[in-house]
Image 1 (cartoon, rainbow over the protein chains, first blue to last red):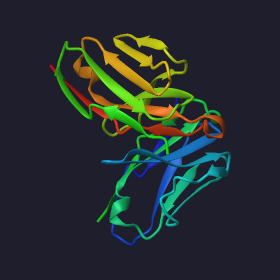
Image 2 (spheres, rainbow over the protein chains, first blue to last red):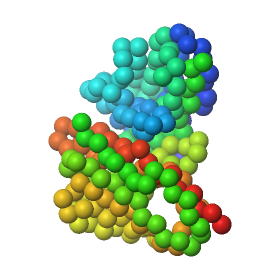
Image 3 (tube, rainbow over the protein chains, first blue to last red):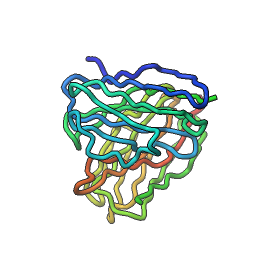
Length: 113
Length: 113
């Protein structure tokens, strides 16, 4: 069956521009998670959704970062006024229920020039 | 803040050799997971260890959870080139944070033929 998909796979943007990263979770998975993976920092939790609600946004690095989920399915992570330190791989994961095994997508590699 | 320290950070060995990767924390997690990540892909769950002192085997991979549930190790016997990848340990939060994974920075393993 289809796994978690993310788009785009690569994104190069200029400093100061806004970007949107998309995640399509596995069908039927109620929980969705965003992580950021960067050199030196490893994999960091950003935010998770239960349905369309985000009970924990504590990992979002700044107010330039926001995320939403609609229809209990697709999620979008938006980064406004991108900075060079935002360059990283952004990974999305989904699970059938919260605390169940998380299945990761291939990630979006964001490069801010 | 709960932190996981992994060692070594890099490991390059010859096919057929044995190796051990360590994951240590100053905090107790409800359980600990090991993932493997290949280039351009998201992490894939290998195993979850829950009970202090637990040992799990997955073919040539042996996972141990420390008695105090603060450290874990991954031992690979007779490594093969197909074992090459980034190995990540992740602690699962407890109580109200049981959805949150805290990752170590990973061990990049290269097995040379």
